[in-house]
Image 1: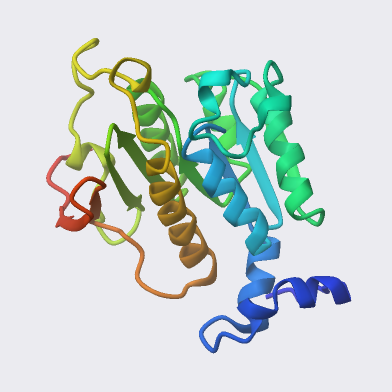
Image 2 (image 1 turned 90 degrees about the vertical axis):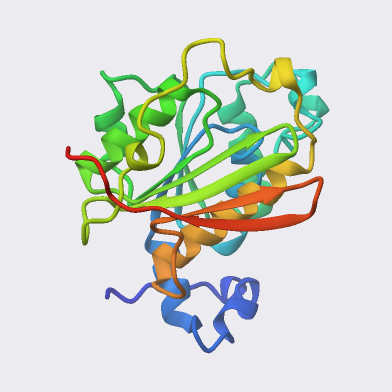
Amino acid sequence: MIKIQFAPNEVARYARHIILREFGGEGQQKLKAARVLMVGAGGLGAPVLSYLAAAGVGTLGIVDDDTVALSNLQRQIIHDTAAIGSAKVDSAEQAVHRLNPHITVEKHALRLDENNAASILERYDIIVDGSDNFTTRYLLADMAADLHKPLVSGAIGRFDGSVTVLKPYEDSNPHYRDLFPAPPPAGTVPGCAEAGVIGALPGVIGSLQAMEVIKLITGIGKPLIGRLLLYDGLDARFDTISYKRRLIF
């Protein structure tokens, strides 16, 4: 591994990481060298970007084609009232740099589709899905698998959320479509605007996604590969479902 130099103030910034026996200076160097793409700078993207920036992930790519609206602020805490009307990628970049000026931010103010996804995803080590629609979720899952990129997938709705990690290109690990073979019919699953969502829920799920990213980068712990972590906010309960590869691709 190439040794990366830290400025004195970076050593102080990351001191609580560096003293961890499982982590140390080598783990922090891995974070600084890493390139992570966050798809969506909304409810899930807010905690993911905040915690990865605070942790010292060297390069954060942000994909989002939306602007900040007043109704976003109840849960998308990377944005504030002054950012209303601004592009979410711009607002998120400013928040990341306020938190940690050592982070490089790469902005992609667009919606991912079959024509541009591969050229963007291939630039990064790990992909994080914070999208709010099934088209993007399935596109990301399929494209990340084809490009051999780990995907940290999260989803929320009303009071519930879920997280899983996908690396189907290794060891016969399952695909996203082993878990969810096909998108639900259009209009059958209401989005946040129709069904609502409790504001703190994305913080729980996004923080779990950030933790999985840090584990993947540093090699510590056991990622949620082949496991779907479910969170019920009303009942304050976590459950884990194991799943295996069952489809032929």
